[in-house]
Length: 270
Ligand SMILES: O=P(O)(O)OC[C@H]1O[C@H](O[C@H]2O[C@H](CO)[C@@H](O)[C@H](O)[C@H]2O)[C@H](O)[C@@H](O)[C@@H]1O
Image 1: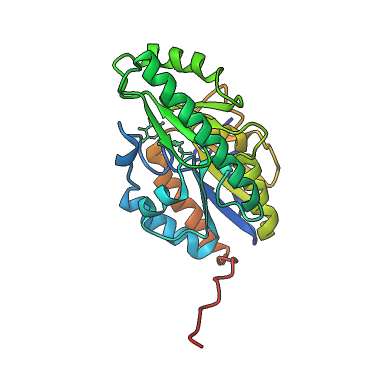
Image 2: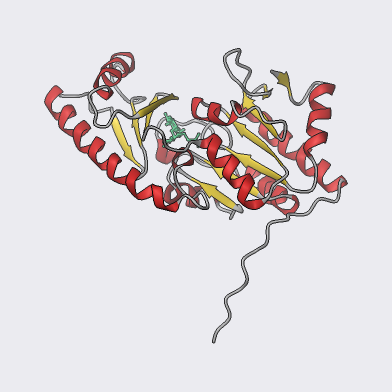
């Protein structure tokens, strides 16, 4: 893992992806928005929003988040070229048909979990976030987060069908097994748009699905160094995002890069 902003090697790698056809993709919580005690309080800082708007003048911007599209849309305050929700299960061009099956499975899990919570008198700080195509079970507000984590871990093995569970920041993300994820979503976005290369920045375990792609045409960046991550590069801290976006803008501007995604044709009155 190399330090993206402070090593000549990373600088050369960054330079190599600033080519026509670049796609700039970002995770949301913990990457663009600081982690806060409750999910509904997450906010995209105005400085990053302004920088993302500038990035989108030079290359298409994709937000690939664990949140639902409905939830993320109003938090962004600008219109990126692509929004993919539910860890890659929602909003991916070409995958619309599989989403309905995922919604059914999630409703079943939710009902099973609510019944189990009632039976065991679960900690009221444990909250199910129903995102239609996946569930997030948060325990940040539990009276004893460690005990809640263990109890939930045991409980999930009794769900039907067994979910794919990706642990996150005081949260378990439950997704249908054998479904897409953030890595396959980014690959599909690149395929349908014809992107020649991409940069992806994320901070959490679900972002490892992208980091593990390890494609030469994808520069993966993790917020904070980790010896356990498959990401190619890292930023020291979340606050370095502004600097990274600034560097991207400067280099794309110098290269004369323009956003190459076609805007939809305006609808004209009959
Ligand atoms: O893929 P992301 O955009 O990073 O989304 C991951 C999850 O983010 C949210 O939960 C996390 O952020 C909350 C706000 O800072 C925090 O309170 C929580 O503890 C974190 O786990 C979101 O609520 C989930 O739906 C996303 O899956």
